[in-house]
Length: 45
Image 1 (cartoon, helix red, strand yellow):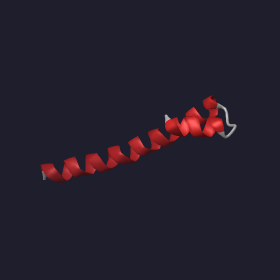
Image 2 (cartoon, helix red, strand yellow):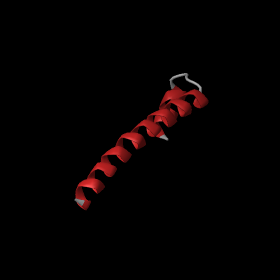
Image 3 (spheres, one colour):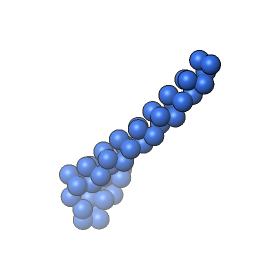
Image 4 (cartoon, one colour):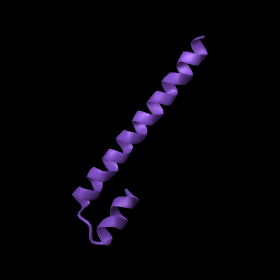
């Protein structure tokens, strides 16, 4: 949330910043999910 506040203070629209933050969070979730799945497969072996 601090990131959105800093960016809007710098003149960017909150909706634009929020959309970009959501894309980044989705990408991080995707990367972490793959890593977690790999660990789960290894643990089962």
